[in-house]
Image 1 (cartoon, helix red, strand yellow):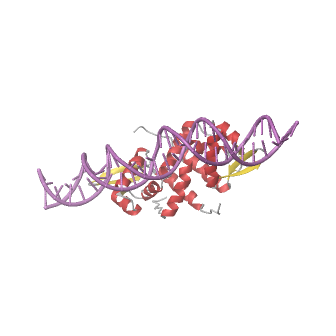
Image 2 (tube, rainbow over the protein chains, first blue to last red; image 1 turned 90 degrees about the vertical axis):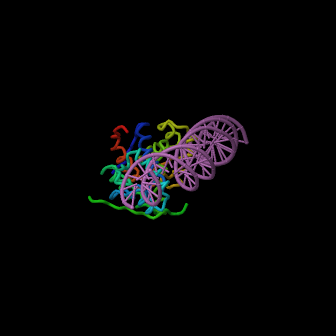
Image 3 (tube, each protein chain N blue to C red; image 1 turned 90 degrees about the horizontal axis):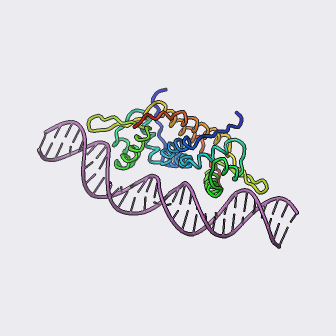
Length: 107
Length: 107
DNA sequence: AGATCATATGAATATATATTCATATGTTGG
DNA sequence: CCAACATATGAATATATATTCATATGATCT
């Protein structure tokens, strides 16, 4: 696999960076990962991520606005899940690849 | 491919989010993409990305510190390139996958 | 050494954004 | 309707960070 030379438009760069920026916060990343499988309600997400329900809710709003997660109400609770299979695979791949790393020889 | 349930430690989340955060800025993303192929000198990067050399240099420092790029001096110029093949493939995959999207039905 | 080019650095600033707390909205069950 | 619960929202705050400008460092050439 030779040198690849990815060049993208400014608009593309902004759009892609936006997606990365959302994953670029540990709290949000954990929230997304918690919603990759079956739908989870907010309090559940708060519990497994050990974040306050309020904070989770704030982040969920951003993730829903970016169409990374979608929400569905069931009674009192609102369940969140990855918006679609594509988002699921993209996120999973990103994390999978990124976590292969961790080599980290010292500076 | 059934439901996957990625759970990661707090430290892992922070490490992975750190990587994403660096890609979460359009200027930096363009800089990284410019360095995925052959090594490029700073002024070259500034030119193709249409960013000021100073700004590019600031970003390059972060990217080098994160071991995403490495630098090599040749005479007056300093060339930057993806740190290794793994970084290259991870970044390329991330962008490739993320750019497949762009569907974006209105809110 | 001095001049010039290339890159790096530091301060200053403006802006974004993560988090908390208080409060509101919405939903179910008695 | 009222109480209890679940989620959402708004303001306030603290912190991070992107960018610019001015200046410094480093390298080459005469």
